[in-house]
Length: 432
Image (cartoon, rainbow, N blue to C red; front, side, top):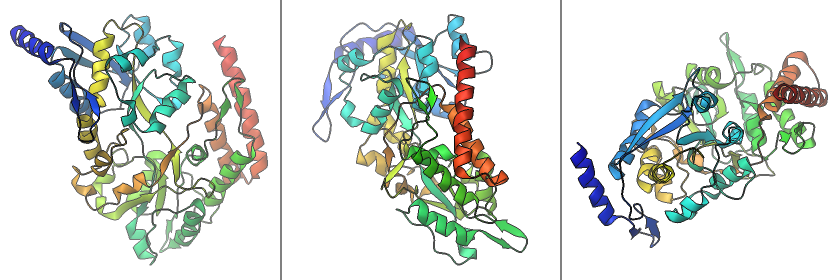
């Protein structure tokens, strides 16, 4: 086996340092600069459940092994007792860290693992023009830096899912692309009915922060660590979430898997959500649902949710930074990104051919309106903080107080702002 690896490495040395011209006439990086390539084992740390074993093999380990046979990749999903801080404390820091821009890479940054990728991007001629600009901007917003400390490789999409059987039952036309929140609200009123003892709900808009992200509303001031909830814009968002829930018969507040189940069971007509095709088990009954573009605000036409993406960065402690970057090059290659798109994972590359391929390998998606996911563009990312989850929890508590306790929106919003600030101060005090 060692002889095979050695011979392959020699072949790679001969042909390394080259570039190719793609169909658009642009130069693309191919292999590494001409250097000796001794066998390297790399570790990649990521939150458990972010990729299936099959996806890890399909998008990372197999493509890397094929392109860089001297690199062996070992995946390390974080589990109880072996989260990233604990791995670092044990001297087992992964070479590559996978994280989300939504949290601002706070854990990774707090552990002093961040490095700039600027030199490696230049060294390996990574063409950043291939990426969706919003995807790269979200990394910069998350770190408040102009350079990149991570490279995204896929993102969520936003869409409005609907149950066709409920629309057929009540003789209503299906939703269409380009609807606003006002449009789907009016539709939800007509579909929220008690029929033969069964309560049908018109719309589940999901957690409040998703529609807020379309307006790029930050939760917390990143410099002052103070809640920003008590504003006219947040009042507008909370009012919209509340009026949908105040439709008689639509008061139930259900998120995530509980809401997905209602769509499949045939009692929820519409749900505004992210990519729940797999997570929501929609493949178990594909004939009853379809999607259209995510509802929009009149003042932000064509704008969906902010970018929620997964990205790869290289740990400051890694002794194999070049090899680690070659792994990043592989997962962001046209070949792997096209394969992801075919498997219904949204590529962060802006190539129209890759977008057109979305879901094409999935039989039950063949007659779905899957291109609806591209009918909205991601909203501009705001600067996230480590306290955003506190504020988002407070805003969802406020919604519950309005719907279940009858509080007015302004009072509920003011109290949410106060709660968020109190919890932030407690968190800060506990960290000292």
